[in-house]
Length: 119
Length: 483
Image (cartoon, rainbow over all chains, first blue to last red; front, side, top):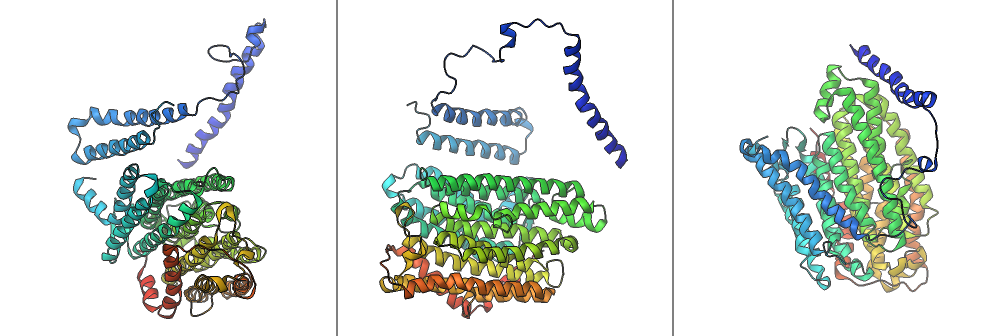
C-alpha cells in the first residue's frame, strides 16, 4: 500500500518533465518558420506602451485596490453563507455577522483615515 | 460546534476575548480622539489590559480544554497570561512619554500593542499546532509594524524590514515543521501526537525532522544562537519602547510555545533532541555573553544580553524528557521568564529615560556621571544590572539558581558549568555600565516623566523584594504544571 502510493509520485515525476518537453520540442521540429517583426516582439498584452514604463503612479490606487480586495474576498465567503442562510444554525449565522462586522470596522477605519478621499 | 459550547469555550478564554474586542473597539474610538490627546488612547489601552488582567487573576485556578481540544487553559497559560498582560501595561507606561518626545504619537501604536499581546495570550493557551501558528502570526505581524512605526527614520524602517523578512522566513520553517509532524502522526493536536507516538503509528524520522524545524523556527523568534542574527539590528533600530516590549513579550511567547510543544508532545523524542538543545543552549550563552563585551551602544548591549538570557531559559528545557524533572523544568523556565521580564523592564525604562531624539544618548559614555545628577535612575539601573548578572538577593539570581538546579537534577553538570562561567563573563559588561554611572565624570541628560520613574522604580523594588521573598512566586510557578 505504502510503496504503491510512492510509485504514483515516481510515475508523475517522470511524466511531469516529459509533457512540457514534448510540447516545446515537437513544434520546434515540425512547425514552419516565417519570422517577421511583429512576431518577434516581446509579448505585451493590450496596447503598445507609449513612453517610459518606469513611471511613478499614484499610490492611492493601491489603497483603493486594497479596500476593494477585502470586500471582494468577503463576497466569496458570504455567497455560500447567504445561499444556505435558511438552514444554518444560529452559531453559523452569528459567525457570518461577526465576519462582516470585522470588515466593516476596517472600512470605517479606512474611511476616517481618509483613504476613500481622492486627492 | 454549537452555540452553547461555543460560549463555554469563549468563556474559558475570556481575558483573550476582552483584549481582542477592546483592541478592535479602540481602533475605532481612536479615530475620534484628536492628535493632541493620544494620552487618552494610551490610558484606554492600559484599562483594557487591566480589565483582562483582573479577570485572569480572579480565576487563576481555571483549567479547561475547549475548542475541541485546540485550546487548553491551565496553570501554565494563566501564569503566562498574567506575565503578558503585566508586560503590556508596563509597556504602555514606558511608551506614552517616549512617543511624545520622539514625535511618534499615533493611536495605532497602542492598538497594535493590544493585538500583539492578544497573540501572546493565544500562544499561552494553544494546544494545537495550527493555533500555535495562528498565535505566532498574530503576535508577530503587529510587532513588525511597531518596529517600523518611527518611519521615516531609516534605522526604524531597516529594523522593521529585517524583522519582517527573517520573521516570516522563520514562520515558514515553523509551518514546514507542522506539516512534517502532521505527515508523521496524522494530527496537529499535541495530545494526538502523543497518542500517535505511544500507539507506534508515527513515522519517527519524519517526526524528529518536524520537531527540529519547529525548534529552528521558534528559535528564530526567541533569538537562539545560531538563529539570532537579526536581534541586535532590530533591537537597535526599533523605537526603544517597542524594543523593551519585544525583548520580553516576544521571547516569553516563543518560549511558551517551545515549552508546551516539547514537554507536552515530544518527550518521546528527547533522546534525539536533548543533545541538540544542549548545544544550542551552550552556543547561545557563550556567544551572547562574549559578543556583548564588545558593545558600546546600550541597546545593542541589551540585545546581546537578551540573546544570552534566551540561552539560560533554554537550559531549563534541556532535561525535559525526564518525566520526574519535567515539572521543575517548566517551573524554573517560567520563573526565569518572570525574573527576566522584571529585570529587562527596569533596564529599558532607564534607557528610555536617557534616550534623546535622533538616537542620541544611547552610548555607554552618555551614562557617565548618572549617579550624581539622577541618583534614582542610576540606582535602578544598578539593580537591573546586578539582577542580569545574577547577584543575590535579586530575582535574577534566583532565576539562574532554579535553572541550574533543574539542570543538575537532570544530570547535566557540564552545561551548568558553562552557564556559571558565562554568567561570570557577563558580569564584566553588566558591571561596566555601573562603573560608568558611578565612577566616571559626565553630564548625562535624562527626562523626568512620572510614569517612567514609577515603572523603573517599581520594577527595581520588585526585583529586590521578590528576590528576598521569592517563595510564593516560585510556588506559583511550580503549580503552573502542564497537562
